[in-house]
Image (cartoon, rainbow over all chains, first blue to last red; front, side, top):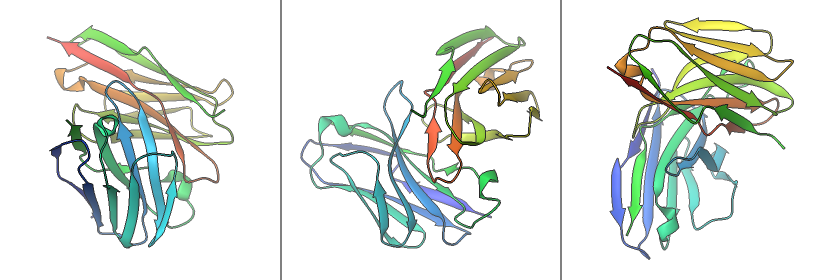
Length: 117
Length: 112
């Protein structure tokens, strides 16, 4: 069965420090991978998505970057964190194969609560 | 502009009561709509998916409806339980894209 792992679960980092959040998927190949951020009381905001190794699409200009060094690994990074980077970060995957693509939905990781102090 | 709006923002009900959550969308062209349940501090979990041709779909005590003409969906929870306390998120996918449009969710609290 397919599983998605995301870590760490919680993180407290000082302003200006670097960030690395990792997400891995098991039990599938060629998944589409996504990073979302959820601010308190807000909806999920798509940050990045990737349809293959080395292929990253950024949805909003920001202080963050993403990389996909392996098929089932997706990393969210920052060189210098800002206070506004605080939030709940979710990794998600969806089957990358084609039709019936429309029937597939996200599977989310358990999330990382990031607090920048 | 593709948008998904949910109402109410929050809802408090007593255990055993029924409730209905609303989702209105302007996403076009429409592919499918999913309802997710998100417990506090956890990732969302899919409850049900609705495609263009489906009007009603049930998953236990959860029943989702879709009116593709008016672009509205509802999630009805029957005989609510304390464990139903969570945020419920409506997500709509547009055909031919990898992008999904998320509603801001309805926060449901079930009281004993």
